[in-house]
Image (cartoon, rainbow, N blue to C red; front, side, top):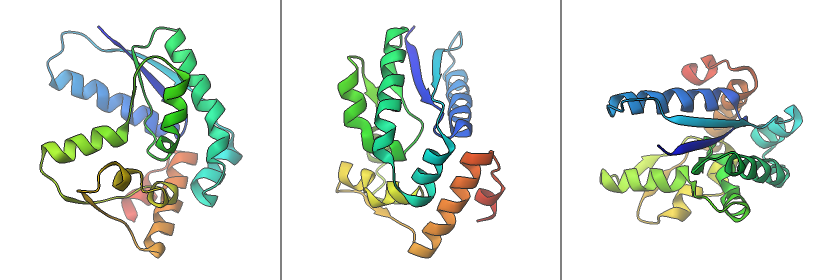
Length: 175
């Protein structure tokens, strides 16, 4: 069985949610045993988290944190690595350069799912940085990604920040 390496910590609740979803999917697939998972939880400084989610700055400061996590996951035996944070997929090239094992991209996987289900138009909810960098649209020009208005984007950013910094998902549900 392959060992899944997960870079966590950029929103610990997102890491936990991803972990739980992965376990459920494995159960639904009828696997005879649980998957072998290794989570490398990056100790993200609060200021960096705030800068990323609210100010939309400091993404480059994440490069050494991500590459160090990827290198360590490879070193301890991960067969491939995933990162359950859409925004930080901006740094995919840096992660891939730092390791010899595959880094599976949320962007690529999402695009493949959309194609397999013949979806040509979809709404994109994420951080301002995810929207600004057009990560999904750049990956496939044939799919239309509908983005929120600037006012709605501010609400989304605040709700995401609340979720990442406190684990409180109430603002996400309300808005």
